[in-house]
Length: 358
Image (cartoon, rainbow, N blue to C red; front, top):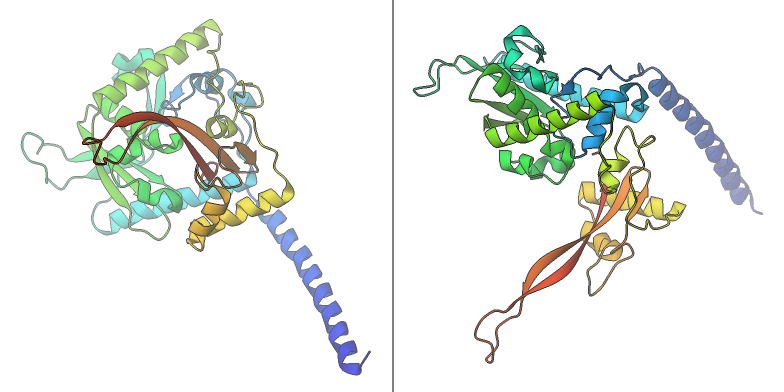
């Protein structure tokens, strides 16, 4: 071995030692950062249905929230970081409004349906707290010019969902339940306060907040209060509703999935360590829009050219592979023999790879 090769080998060994030592220090930093977070234990949820949760798609989850609140799984360190970042973004949005003359008042004002002023809603047993009240600057036309302020609800969202939340209808009909349930909270406060409208403020990292007007929705109110009455009935009787059919996202994110056993109606594919790395890489590409379509074709593909995960279901860590089958009408292209399109119902397979809860 030449002297140059010996020097290179020695330097390589030193670099590996240095990198190993720095990895240990980095790991210790991360552990101590997580340990410094104050644990979030479960809150007593026994008396009231929370306005922020009443539109949850699983009735059994809502009953567990009331009856088994003490068994709710605690929020892990990653969840606490995510929640605290959301709170920071929401606070910044309210601060920015104050800076331009729209100072938010009555922040975190609490409502409980057993309060004397809410006596007419007592049968629902709902509680909540508003993010605040926004001034209107006397800008509304008659017959609403007397309104001085309306409630606001500020929600921070993952940047991945920003483009799918441009309108109120986008939010109400969103495929992610933690997004579609957002309007219910503001709608309940509108009913409690007897006001015809308010604002949903959607915020995310690096974007100007979206301020979306929302009028009181009678149909949504009826839906959510019907759910509240069903929950109350089970709580009084000490019973549980049947679990919903297993859903990888809803059940996978449930804080009570350790005491609830919904039937898995789908066969979950086996996931190896290499598969997990591959899926993580795919989601990184999706986030940064780099070579995404190429990798999507390889991993998902189409019915004619199925990819590795096309038509399958799997969960690994916080990544889910979900496949749904829908009936869609397909059409033949007209030829000389066919003067009209001919519709035909066909089962369509849709596979998505997503990060659960983000």
